[in-house]
Length: 428
Image (cartoon, rainbow, N blue to C red; front, side):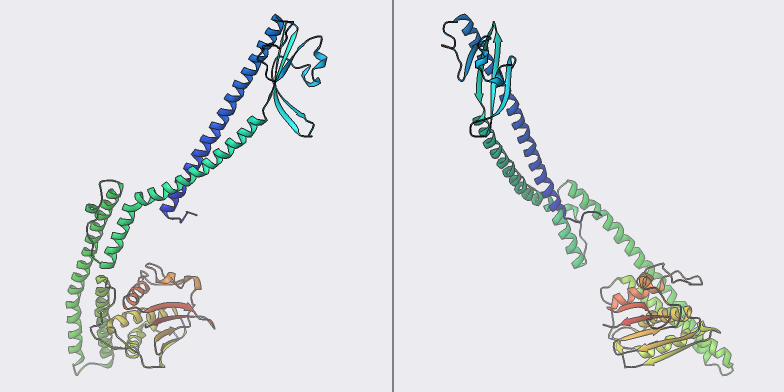
């Protein structure tokens, strides 16, 4: 899973961890080097003093130790070595770390320099307890310094992240401002010639291409809609004239009515697609008030030919009067898709269209839908299971866009009591 932390937070944490880690590494290295160098210097000094004391004792046997540089130690000959502490007697020349219990039952740590030459053995004892106390104090001070530098790194991270990300935040603020105002202005002139400036320039180029594409689509939709209206108007007028002929048979008159309804549906669809191509935040009403029950009745009559010879009935149930502020063409396109799908997928039984006080429901007895597929069916190119024919799966996507344009809520769900599905439009 990718982290969802903000970029500034990640920069601050990275900078603080880097500062803390670098300070800790430097402190550890400094303590280690100090310990090694100090230990080497102390050992060399102790051994040098032990050697010098042994030489003095050899050159002045009558005054062993007198005038020597021994601070804490003793000089013995090989004959008197037994008088030295037992732990010292077999130690070779060199500096040794000794740990032994004291009178207070605590372990005492000291360094012992031993030098053997010409039958004389010199010992120098160096108490390292004060040195270890100093090391502990130094370690405490270094740990405090590491945390101090960590806090300083955190403060610098806060300041630098704000300074570094300020152009990015300004770029995001300008884009949000454009989205609110609906007017796009060039971004690149407001930023320096750096990485953020390159990003702003890339966004300007993308915005220009996208704007040009949208304009081409709008022009295409407008041109196609304008050109289609002319032949549809000719079809509608010709059909009206033919219906006025006195010598028409009932069968021919019914076919002319079907042609008239189809041309009207095509005109309504063109108008709805024009509304969508304008990408308006709210659908225009032009003061139109539409009776939902009347539009539903017209749509049902226009969809009856789809039933063919199926044992299927379609009924309209009006439980309340419902008028909406929207063009009848928009509602007709939405209901045509929903009612048409119900008739298409229902092989037998009943399709019931119910008009309530704030909604319209289309209830069928078809195979139904899965609950997890209810929302997915409104995506472009998605068709229901068992769909036949050559449909492209765009009908419900158009319905969703039209409903969003006018603030309606469209949904589909399976029936709880039996097979079938329920499609609903809630008018808000």
